[in-house]
Amino acid sequence: MVKAYCVTCKEKGVEMKDPVIEKTSRGGYIAKGLCSKCGKTKMCAMMSEDNAKKAIESGEAKKGF
Ligand SMILES: [Zn+2]
Image (cartoon, rainbow, N blue to C red):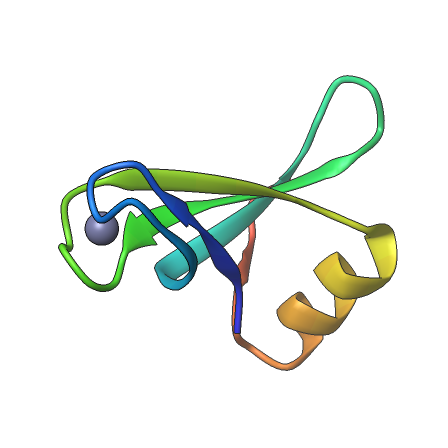
């Protein structure tokens, strides 16, 4: 499960809906998706390479790079 902070719900650790993991220009990984609580707020979270690959392999997140 990919979690992030939602600025609308003002809550940390909210599950991300349909997360897509992208690579940043600096070689990091970032997950982007919608807040599963309010369903309208875009969220993003930095991820380690390990966590990014695990999330993609398990099908929790889509590979966007
Ligand atoms: Zn929200």
